[in-house]
Amino acid sequence: MKTYENTGSKDTRSGFGAGMTELGRTNPNVVSLCADLIGSLKIQTFIDENPERFFQIGIAEANMMGIAAGLTIGGKIPFTGTFANFSTGRVYDQIRQSIAYSGKNVKICASHAGLTLGEDGATHQILEDIGLMKMLPGMTVINTCDYNQTKAATIALADHVGPVYLRFGRPVVPNFTPADQTFEIGKAVQLQEGNDVTIVATGHLVWEALEACKVLNEKGITADVINIHTIKPLDAEAIIKSVKKTGCVVTAEEHNFLGGLGESVARELSLTYPVPQEYVATEDTFGESGTPAQLMEKYGLNANAIVKKVEKVISRK
Image 1: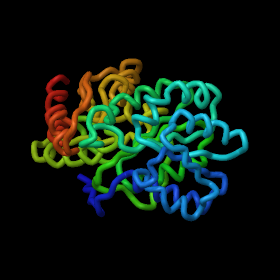
Image 2 (image 1 turned 45 degrees about the horizontal axis):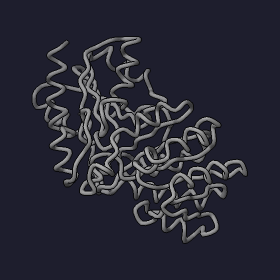
Image 3 (image 1 turned 90 degrees about the vertical axis):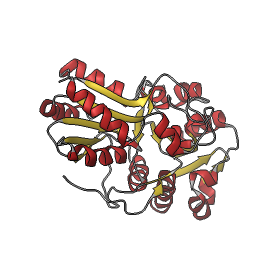
Image 4 (image 1 turned 120 degrees about the vertical axis):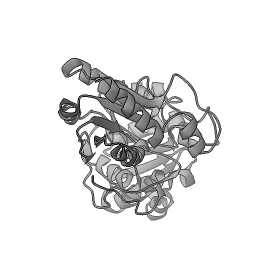
């Protein structure tokens, strides 16, 4: 079994900030818009180095999306920044009408996604944003797993033409993917190889899947672990290839099982190669206030939950 080491825990939002800093130095068309959350988005260095390419919109997220759409007409590549809840639910009409419908080259960058927003509670812990965004025609949806991958994804988005939703988080999490990685939109990354089950994970649940593998190996169970950083377009080929070998799949995500990664995987498999599937995701529910660790435990979004679902899905083969 291949092992992955935490090279130093960091928050994925800082990976976004580091990516923006690099883009500020290498791509003169990149501009940044923020809804009064500079510190939370970690973009102060970009602002310091490129003050003429930063727009502080204030707490007016809908206006921010409209401005971003307009900036693309002049050839700029706007990266908007605010919390995931305010990047999607609050401004869905503006994204649909002004960005997605007309295929504007806007990068919607969303921090503090999911339950791991923590103590701010249910009103801020959006668990339906992936579903909202993947339903928009032409929208690419990306959910990164650690600091390095978030930095690489941010940089890659500047070369991708078309609207993108980039989702990342607030808490400090293990940083385990290569610092020099090449980020390919729509291309899954296989992290482990096994024969008994396929674990398809995204975001913070990728590390938990790797931790689950340690427990599973002690039980004599080996798993393919696939890091799906791009939920749309989904790398269905990689998933189908794996499940043809293992015969079952567990999907893991920090999102409602309705509309998330698991639902996308289920659709692809139902059309091409149906196998038993189990979901590690929140049920039809909102979150609540608590520490990230407390919430991930209560809502079953950790390595222990993955182990249980793996044992269950194997019993269904």
